Length: 298
Image (cartoon, rainbow, N blue to C red; front, side, top):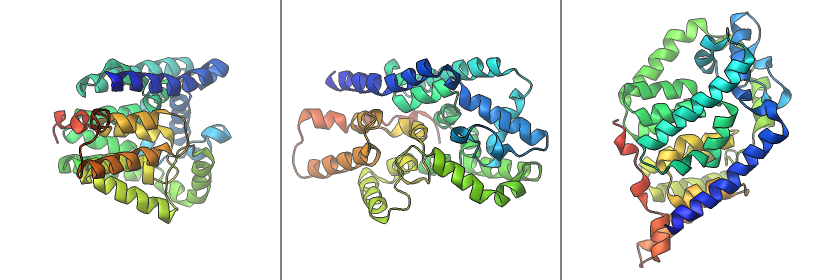
């Protein structure tokens, strides 16, 4: 019960920030879905999708990320805004229910923030939780989702993702993407608000050692927000199935350093727990029984 109270408190603190941003600047609501749809429209019209959007939100995803938004280009912006927010909320609710997590997990700040933005991170989570070959589509939308597929030995899903990328390659603007990589990289660097350790050898080593202590399977699920270049806060969403209460609480708070710090704290607790009995509160905080992704078949 104490961890439930602690998680609800940290979730409210972290999510209040996202909600406040919407109150201050209402156009932020569903803005990512609208921006990605505009990028898909630009591509279909022969324009440059990687020049679409305001400086803080210029589209910078790989070409396959355009595919989910092709069907939305005929819709008005208002419908995309509300449709994406409500759709992502429904997918998040389904994912939380399938993982047998309490309903308040909808307010896990990275997840709640992604819902408000209409961000496809929620769709990626739903696909990963669904399991089976269809979960491979998650790594078509977001390449780093392949870590979770490998963790679960979903090789049919990996094969499906590779097939989709290969089949669609002749139709997608890969040549332009490669030509504009320096510009796209600059956009990603400008937009990065996460806490990736990429490029810092010492912190990367700490991350590798900490995740190794948690085990290869969980380590792969948790790797993206720690190692992926230019990671955004929303990149934590795909790790929800592998979160312990301790790491979830750390990742919920808007305090710099807690993305890696939460994993390190759990690794230390696990190491100490192998030598002596931990207090009950700590045992519950690192309880891996929450790691319920096994409910989704590989």
